[in-house]
Length: 204
Image 1 (cartoon, rainbow, N blue to C red):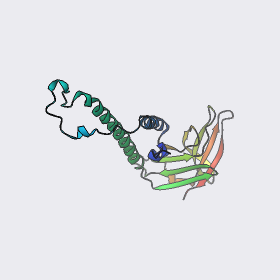
Image 2: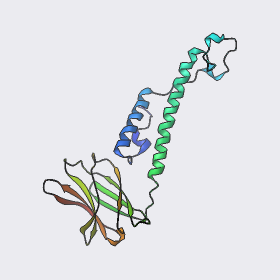
Image 3: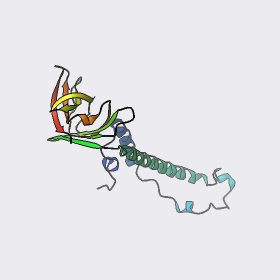
Image 4: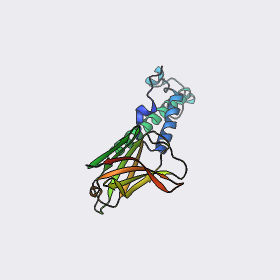
């Protein structure tokens, strides 16, 4: 059994689909390439001064050692790049400032909605994390509404998902979300131009 971490162990489930696909391809290439070659013992010491200058590369290493050193450097650079990108993305992704949150859940379907502070222009940022939603037919999409007395009043945004895996979305609404008492996630059906309510929740 391999002890190598899986892709989800490294990055979690919060990456946008495009970024997840790109990083997963890099992860698979690293796994296929295997660990970088071990540093030969002779590279840990200064080059033999008795070797003729014709046998050496301009780097100062015997030519036969240059290929191994370059391969090692390339492998280290690739691992460092992927690790740094993932760490940087996670720091950015966790930087959303939440002042209020609402959880919508029904069976395997779930939506966690966070509201940020209103900006100086009166806009309210939102972060929405959904999981358990199926991929919809062409022309259909999901709609998120603010509600009053359980009825949808204003639209927060629309979106689609590729499948039931976790997906994170960002919305921005031009109103004060605290004026409403709940949220509703609905399935917009193109065939009858109607929104079918899926999950609702009151906001505190």
